Structures are given as structure tokens and as C-alpha cells.
Amino acid sequence: MSGNTSAPRHEASAGHSGVEIAKIMLHTFVAYVEDKPGVLTRVASLFRRLNINIISLTVGRSERSGFSRMTIVADASDEAGHRIRASLYKLEDVAEVDDISGVSAVTRELALIKVAANAESRSGVFELAEVFRARIVDLAPESLMIEITGVESKIEGLIQVLNERENRVLEVCRSGKMTMRRGHHTSRVLRAMGVADIPDGIEPVDPD
Image 1 (spheres, rainbow, N blue to C red):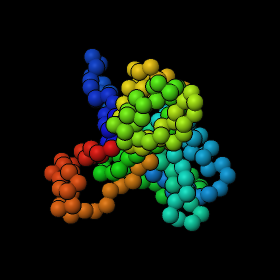
Image 2 (image 1 turned 90 degrees about the horizontal axis):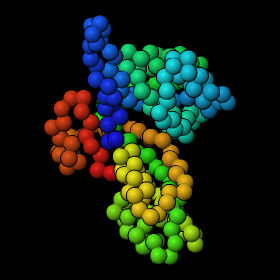
Image 3 (image 1 turned 180 degrees about the vertical axis):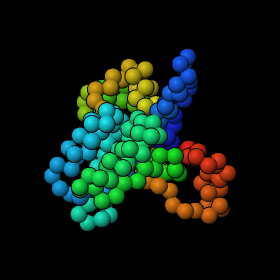
Image 4 (image 1 turned 135 degrees about the vertical axis):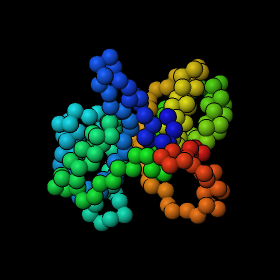
């Protein structure tokens, strides 16, 4: 999957009964929540009540004192996406909610991957890490730990290649998606970034 978090999962179609099936797509919500106990539980309970599965959830300190930034990715139709945003905003400890699905944004994920490796196979793992612009952060007699940052497809690609080799993946720890709207750039900057002349509703592909 690319950095575009609004790629449709199921195209809308009409069955024999003529009833149109809602288009399900990945929605990304950014919420600023107060640093209070129980906020995460209330957010998770909201999605449970709406019967919507959370694909990814990250939370951490923000630039605002006393507030954390929460990024939530979920499968939902457009109608359900509007309902999620409105419901989140109604929660007592939520100060701001933004649905950034379909807008130009930068999305990244961090992963730590522990791989079985001995003296004979280490060099191959080092070469593979260099190809994926990852780095080795731990070296033990029988294993290596790789740190990689990028879009989901980049991380999935590295894991797939590792599984195809003799290096067995022992553990995987992933941060979940972190997303931020792009700034307002001039056309010259956009061309330098390789994202000029992008049609409305289509996000640029991130280089990582």
C-alpha cells in the first residue's frame, strides 16, 4: 500500500436487487485529545459501538501542552467516515478532529524487525537493509534487528523479501501510521518534489 490512505477497498456496485453497495475506503482521522486517563478507552469504545474496525492507531505528545495527537486509520464508507468524525468530536476529552483522507499528506510508519542470522548470513541482511534504506540497530550472535521507516508498502516489501530468504523473521514491532498534512507549497516547490500536476483527490506517491 502507498502513502495514499484513501485508496478504495471495494468499488461501489449494484447487485441484482439494484441496491448500491457503499464504497469502503481507508479513512485517516487526526484527533487532539486531552492527556487524561481513559481517553483511549472511550475512543476505542466508540469504534466498537459503530462496528468499525481500527486498522491502525498511534498516540503521542503533540505541540500543544496538555494534549496528545491521535492518528486513527479505519475502513469505512464515506457516510460512516462523516459519522465517525462527528462522534469523535462529541467525546468530552476530544478538542479537535480532522479527517485527512483524500488530502495531500505525508504518511510514515516505523518498524523493528528481528531476524535470525548467523555469521554466514549476516552480510546478506546488511546488503538488504541498505537496499531498503533501513539500518541495523542490534547485533547478536544468532540474530539482527532492523529499523525501517517508510510507507506501509516499503515495510511489507522488506518483510516479504526476508521471509523468502533463509533469514527467518523472529519478531516484528510496528508503530502504526503517522500522518501529517503537507504544507502549502508554490508550484516550483511542488515540481521539485515531483508532485506537480496531480489531479484533485489523488495524493502524490512518497519516495520512501
